[in-house]
Length: 98
Picture 1 (cartoon, one colour):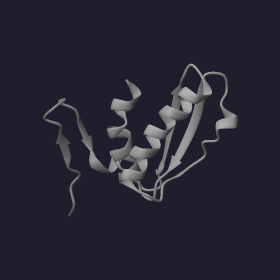
Picture 2 (tube, one colour; picture 1 turned 90 degrees about the horizontal axis):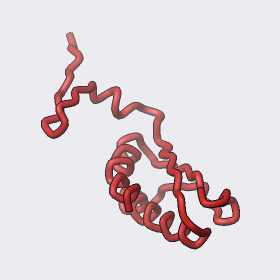
Picture 3 (cartoon, one colour; picture 1 turned 180 degrees about the vertical axis):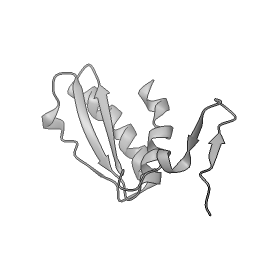
Picture 4 (tube, one colour; picture 1 turned 45 degrees about the horizontal axis):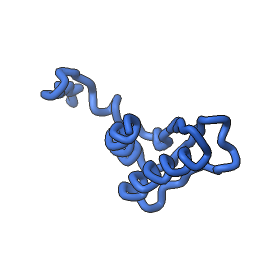
C-alpha cells in the first residue's frame, strides 16, 4: 500500500505533495515581459529564451516581435515535460526582477 508523502521545504517551511507541484500535461510556461520599447522587450525575451534553451534546446515559443502590445508581450513556452517547465520557472525568477 502506497502512502502519500508530504515533504517540507527546509528553506521556506512549506510542505506540498510532489505530484501536486509536477503534474503530467503541464508543460507550458507563460511569461509576461514589460519594457519601454519593442527592442527592450526583445532583449528581455532573448534572456528568457537563452535560459529555456539551456534547459531544453527543443523548447518552442510563440513570441513574435510584431505582436507586442504597447509595452508588454505575453509569451508561451512549450517544454517537453512538466519538470523542465518547473525548472524554467524557478530559474527565471531572477530574470523577473532584472
